[in-house]
Image (cartoon, rainbow, N blue to C red; front, side):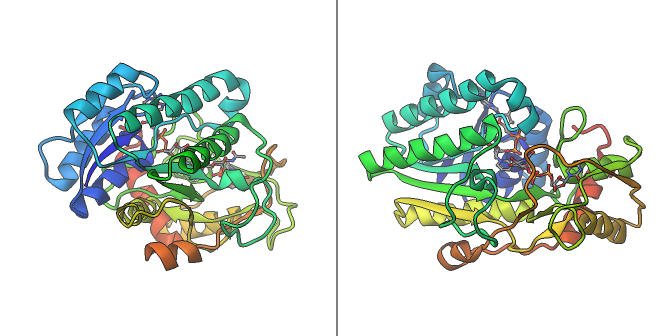
Length: 337
Ligand code: NAD
Ligand code: UD1
C-alpha cells in the first residue's frame, strides 16, 4: 500500500516508516517539523537503503498543502501521528493543543475523504483510560477523566472518528492506544529527541547517564504498588512501529472501526526501570524521591490479548532491550539530531 504518514519525522513516525518499508509498503510524509528534524528522515533513508523518503513540509491544518500531497501522491491509507504531545505544556497552552490536534485532524479527515482515502490509523494513548477502572486494561475498560488538554484531544478525536465511521461505514479506522513507548532503533541512528528537560522517564534516565542531568527525580514512592513508585507498560518503539504494520493488514481486511491497546502487558515500576537500565548498561543512575507529579496514576498496564488475537501482533522486546537501545541512541547522539 501507499501510506500518507503525518508526523513521520517524529519519534514513532520515523521508526514506523522503516517497518512499513520492510513490509513492502511505500510512504509519503507530511510534517511541519515543529517537533522534529529532517535529519531523522535522512537517517531513515540510510537505514532502509533508499536515496530519500518522499517528504512535504506541510501542516495538517493547511488544506491546500494536504490536497497537494494527496494529488501528487494518491494514497491507500493514512497513519496519523502528527500532533502536539507534551502533557504539561498542554495545561498552559490549551488553545494551541486543541487547535493543532483537533482542527488539524478535522482538516486531514476531510481532505482524505475528498481523495477517496478512507483508511486511517490514529495514534491514540492509554491516557484516554484516565485512572483505569480495571488492571490490566482491556479495550472494554471505560474511558476515564483526562486530567489535561493533551489527553482530552486524544479522547475527543476518538469520538469524532467513531461518529464519522457511524455516519459512513466505508471508513476503516484503527484507533491504537499506545502505552509507554521507549527505546530506539537498534542502529542508534534514530530515537527520541525531547526539547529541553525531558518530561518522560526513559529520556530523563538516559540524560542522567550521559551526564546532562545530575540525578533522576522519582515522582512519589508512596503509591499502592510493590515498591511504592508508579507502574507503567513500557513498549519498545520498534515493536510499536510493527503494530502499525499489523493494523494496516486489518484495514486491508476491511475491519471497520477497531480499537487496540499496544503494550506488552507487563507493568514495571520507576525503580524497576532504573535497575534494568543499570543492569543492561553498567551505568549507575543516582536518584532522589520527590513528591508525586500532579495527574499521575499509580498503575497503568495493558491487556494486549486483543491485538495478539486479531492483529497477530505481540511485542517482542523486553525492558533490557528498551534500556540498551535508548542508551545506544543517546550515547551516539548526546545532542539529538
Ligand atoms: P513527536 O512529537 O516526535 O512526533 C509528532 C510529529 O508531528 C512531529 O514530527 C511534529 O513536527 C509533527 N506535527 C505536530 N503538529 C503538526 C501539524 N500541525 N502539522 C504537521 N505536523 C505536525 O511525537 P511521537 O512521540 O512520535 O508521537 C506521535 C503520535 O503518537 C502523537 O500523536 C502522540 O500524541 C502519540 N502518542 C505518543 C506517545 C509517546 O509516548 N511518545 C504516547 C501515546 C500517543
Ligand atoms: C505520560 C503522560 C501521558 C502520555 C505519556 C506518553 C502524564 C501525566 N502522562 O505518561 O499522557 O501519553 O507520557 O509517553 O504526563 N517519572 C519519574 N520521574 C521522571 C519522569 C517520570 O519518576 O522524571 C515517573 C512517573 O511518575 C511515572 C513513570 O515515571 O510513574 C512514567 O512517566 P512518563 O514517562 O512521564 O509516562 P506517563 O506518566 O505514564
